[in-house]
Image 1 (cartoon, one colour):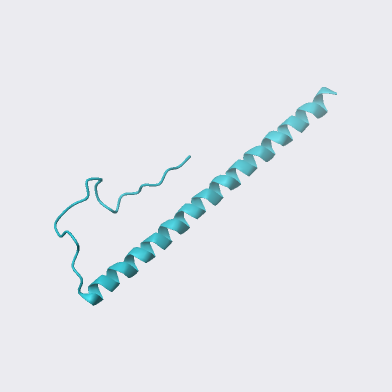
Image 2 (cartoon, rainbow, N blue to C red):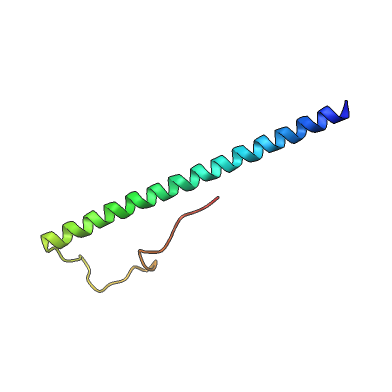
Length: 76
């Protein structure tokens, strides 16, 4: 009676850990896809500005939050 209960508990824990691992992988994949899309959009905007000859709104000013290349992702 005790052994089947322990085996069931072990199987349940393994399934939960596998599911958590898949969720983490999916979350990381979504984050990297979002980063790639944002980077592509930024590159297209930069290319459009270069082609149009448009200058920045405030040249020489830096953001008070630091550089734009910082990684601002939140991982739970």
